Length: 143
Ligand SMILES: [Zn+2]
Ligand SMILES: [Zn+2]
Image (cartoon, rainbow, N blue to C red):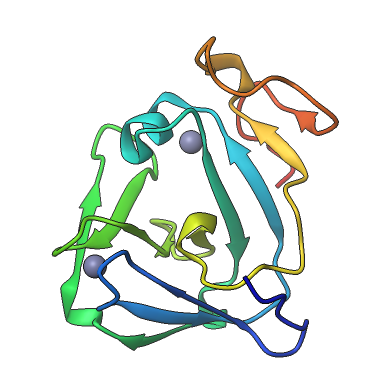
């Protein structure tokens, strides 16, 4: 991976490459989310997401391939993914205030690293261990 400069923005794409986007810094945070919904949505021990503003994201190609799923029993959980390859893609929160970018969809290294682990209270016992990062039982109210 090439390290992107702070000014250049980052490119991302799905596994099949049809959906491509660009996200411009600055990023609010990069976090590991250990909630059960993220486990289901990613198939892994935790999701790693960057948080930005919706206006910072630009779709470059394949926008018509994007499928949207809103978990109706949740306040705001949802997933946008490529309809052909199923890869998770950036999505706005349901209130439209934030853009959630799955870090694994990036093609370049971001200028920030994960700072926090959230929903630590519902983590799977086999997931990553606590380390040097701040942990939060759920989603911090102050964010
Ligand atoms: Zn795809
Ligand atoms: Zn989560």
